[in-house]
Image (tube, rainbow over all chains, first blue to last red):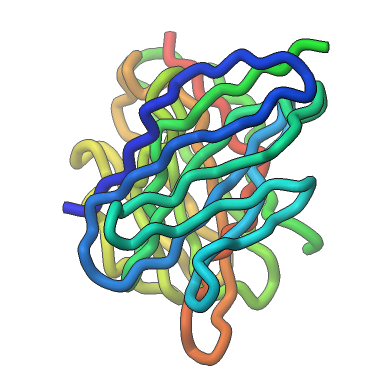
Length: 111
Length: 117
């Protein structure tokens, strides 16, 4: 069965630190990959997505993610985090139909 | 409407009662998803609709859970004989087709927080 793993459950960083959140999936076929973000008190929203083409995709607010097919990974990165990046981040994978989410990573950024 | 609308936003019920949660997706979005979000559990897939049909019901936790969608629009998620472990935030999301293909880009509602006493 298709599954998504996010190994970092809780990440604490200081402002300006670099960020990398891991995401691995189990499905071996063609997939579409997503990162969603949930800011405190807000609903989930799309951060970035990969369908095809350049495996390095850029999203909003300076985030980027790299699809590495051989590693079944789609890690999220940001060179320098801000306090406003404090949120919960969810990786998601879609093959032919449903969208499956990982368990999420809670990011706390301190000034 | 402008976004995905869910009601009620909060529901407190007693164990054993039935509850019905409603989702009104973005106009024109053919795909509709229900997820359950519990503390530490992430987003648990429940059911997915494409139009009025549900190709995948595999995520429904038990036969106490059911969902329907009529007119390709509004969906209701019904939980019968609620249990305390059903307490969670129930999220609805919709997405559109592009070139006959579900984009997978979900637009989420604010959720319905269910508390079973």
